[in-house]
Length: 274
Image 1 (tube, rainbow, N blue to C red):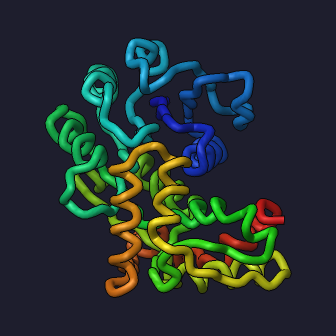
Image 2 (cartoon, helix red, strand yellow):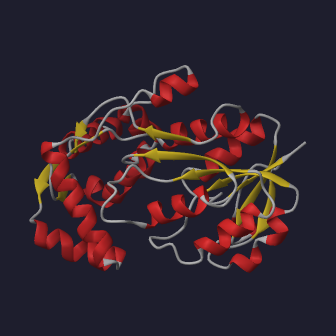
Image 3 (cartoon, rainbow, N blue to C red):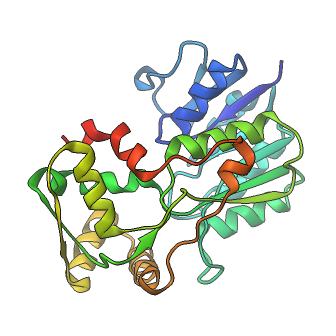
C-alpha cells in the first residue's frame, strides 16, 4: 500500500489529516520535529524531519507516493530544495496554500510556482480565514472584552476539520490533479459577531472594543516580527469591511455535506477559551 506523508503533522490542520487517514486504514507517515512529543495515532508512522532543513527529509520520503504539504513559515526559504526532494520520490502533492491576492507576491505564490514546475501532480487548497486563528483572542475572551481593529471586517471562517477532510478526500480519490480549490465556511460573520458567537459557546457575555490601527500594528509586530506580514494582514482586514470574504460551496461539493459553521467550531473549542 502506498504511503502518504503529512507535513505539519502536529498542527491544527495536519493533526486532523493524520487522524483521518489513520482512521481510514491508510498508510500514513507523519513528519515532526520531535517524535517524542507528537501524540499522534498509534497507527501513524512518526518520523523526525524539518522542512527548514531539507537534508533531513530523505528518510521520511522513502516509498512515499503522495505528500500533504503545509509550509511552516512566512517566507519561501528552502522551498525549492523541499519541492525538489518531494519530486524526487513522490508522484503528487496536495499543498495547503491560501486564498490571498496575487499582489503583493507572497510565499504562497512562490511555493505554488515551484510545485507547478516540479513535474509533480498537484492540487492546491486555498482556504480563506481559519476559525482557529480566533484562539488568539482567548485571553481577552476570558476577561470579557476583545480589543482588536476592524470589528466590521466580515470573514467566512473555516473549521480546520473541514480543511483536513478536503485534504484527505483529495489525497485518496481521483480527479483532482491540477485543481485549485478555494475553501471557506458556510457563512460570513464580522469579527465583532465572531466574538459574540464565542461568548455564547462558552456561556459568558463578551463585548467588542475597537482598537486603533496604529496600536494594533505595534502589538502584532511584537507578536509576529514580520512588518510586511503585519501590514498585509491589516490591509486585508480593512478590505474585508467593504468587501467581505467570499463564501464558497467547495467543502459541500467535495464532501457531500455542509461545511461546519463557526458556531460549531466555537463549541468544539469552548474549553480553549475557558
